Amino acid sequence: MRRRVLLTTAFLLPGLLAPGAAWAQAPGATSAPLPPLPPLPNIPLPRGIALLEPGAWRVEFPHGGEVLEAPQRVVLARIGAALSAGTEGRITLIAEVSEGDDLSTTRRLSLVRARAVRAALVAGGLAETRIDLRAMGRTAAIRDSVDVLAPIVPKP
Image 1: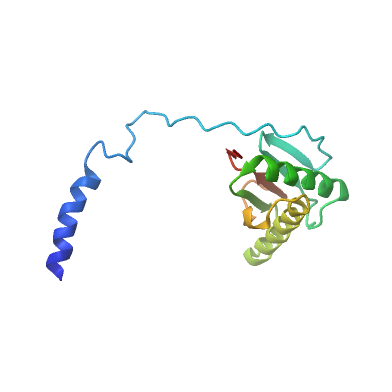
Image 2: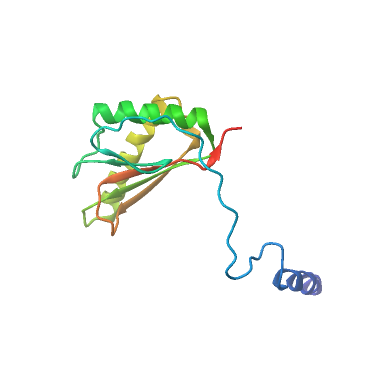
């Protein structure tokens, strides 16, 4: 049995470690540019939601707050509808909390915020199964927010 493992390893390792393997990238080489996002509708953003870059938004929460304001829910529903119609792939929500000493409490608060944003996106027609939640808890960025990161894959 040991002999088979050694033989398999002897045949596989040279191919994996060989320079110029298919998965290896030469130093200094750049990867192919990512395809552009499909044009998303120009949605006026209310106070508390900022456009980070095309396909990425930051939803601000009041310190210690976990509920979205009505204008934020409406706009997030429109963003959810646009992402549902124009993209495929996973949407990532990264939730952060600015203060707190207890790791469990800050992670729970960030999770509640991410769920609130997810519910608003789903209300706009985005499939709940396409949304990944990242409850970061307290981070070095020191902000109370949820970042919505759209996939870079346009719908065919």
